[in-house]
Length: 147
Image (cartoon, rainbow, N blue to C red; front, side, top):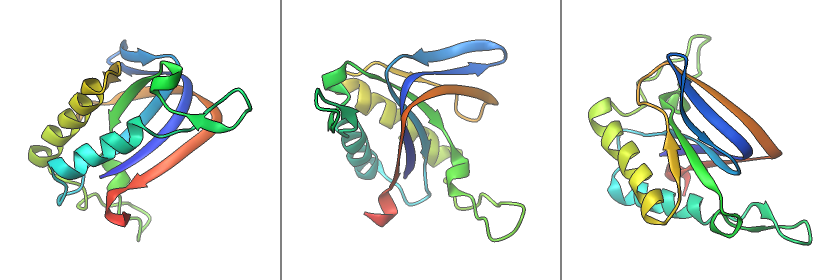
């Protein structure tokens, strides 16, 4: 799985002109699923992201996690994180097919909710307009294939 996690002061997703999900302080998570991913990989990634300490403490150090700041998550499915960019027109055969990706995407959402977080999300496969106000900016890349 691959995830681009951005610390935000706000973020939202709009589908067909209607806001479908919105958060204030927290993480905007762009989440891609690979064909070899499984539930264990998904659970480990959710754990890592939910415990990531990138919010500033009273000394201005990135030392606080999502729970400590009362943050939320906006999770957007993003198969393009598996783009093959060897040519000018990217290919996406490296991304998992929907029958693998959708259950793992939904499991990721559930894992974050089970940890007590408010989780907003887009719609798998939809044309989405995502807006965010990056805080920092702080953006962290996770790739479970790289450990």
